[in-house]
Image 1 (cartoon, rainbow, N blue to C red):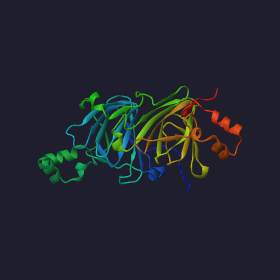
Image 2 (tube, helix red, strand yellow):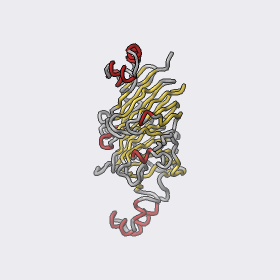
Image 3 (cartoon, rainbow, N blue to C red):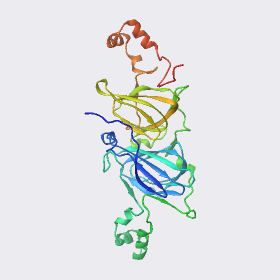
Image 4 (tube, rainbow, N blue to C red):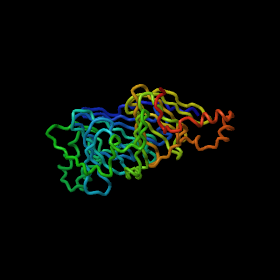
Length: 357
């Protein structure tokens, strides 16, 4: 069966004065369905409010641009967390959390959502449930049920149900006050990938921050790992694969470059150029490598396991370095001299390779 791994941009699912909600469809990107993965973006204009919502999928949110406020109500907790958020923040969102997002600034706030849809209503797509708004939970219940549940008169119940005409995203007036975010509420919920210690830093090559249960324990509940990778102009990311049966879902944040993916029977299943805004998925055990264009390339990925393990095929930690010289010589059907030449290369480089001089 032919695999379509072509990178894609999202479609606009909703757009209004307050902002837009965009999503990737498994009809356009079939690997979403194959991997039980959902992907979407939220774009909020100034004073845009994404109404309180919960989802059928656990997710990782990543702030691509701007700054704002996020409200998170965890299950069975009496008070929500109100977080200041900014570019580079990764936020783990387990099942059952209710979230809202607000942009108080003139700079557009853009948030990426990647998650696991294996327990969702639709394979490869998020289904979001609004609590308020024209299509919110309130509007589905009769006035009698709303009045009984919240101890309201019939008139008050009708007013409450019909007061919010907007849906998904609204733009609120300047005189509408909003809760003040607290830095303390970020603890345990957020990791800023632009400020966190680097897990790998190769001079002239690139750097990476890995999101896992050590630096953000909540990702264990989400069941996903993530990383932010930056490679510099004309640098290369070593060919490698996830050796724990995980899919790699990659969103190109900025820059551009070339990607190759090799799969079963040594077949090259993807060779393409990607740029900021594209999303693509690497199947389980397939080998992927990237080379940046002149301006470099940055991407944010989720891996469908909370503590991913990768095997690299080039560099100091390459699996080839671990295999016996005699086996290499026989496997490549080559001379001892060629085997020694092959083994002698990339003895100090790890994962990222700076461009040749």
